[in-house]
Length: 157
Image: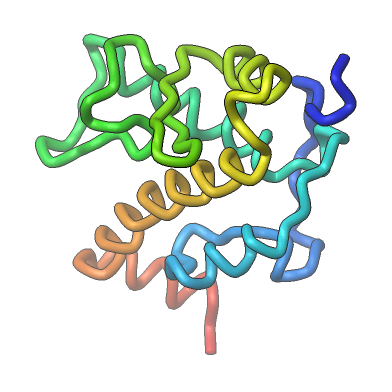
C-alpha cells in the first residue's frame, strides 16, 4: 500500500474533539475553509478528514443521487460532481486547469499514486464539495422555522 494514501477503514468521529477539528452542519463557508486548510493530509485513514469525507459522505451521496428512485430537489446539483461530468461520475476533482472525473474512491487513490492528482488538489476539491453541500443545509435552515427552533434548542445562548 502506498504510504501517502489512507486505507479504506475508518473510525467514528467524536464530538469531544476540539471545535477546529470538526465541521458542523451549519458552519459558514469561510469557517469550513479555515478548518480544512488547517487540516493536515494524514496517511492514517482514521485521521484523514479528506479521505473520510470522500468515502463516507460525498461518494455515497453521489450514489444515492444517481439512483433512479432518488428524490432530489429540482434545483439540486450534486456538490461532488461537475455539471458536465460523464455519467457514472461520483466525484470531480480539479488538478491545475483540468477536471478529473472519478467513478470510485479507488480511482481517486490510483490518481494520487500515479501523480495525476496531488493531495493538495484533492484537499481543495473535497473542501469545495463540502462547502457546496453544506450551503444547501444553511439555506434550508435560514428559511425554515423548524430548523431555526431546532438550532436554538440544540445550541442555547
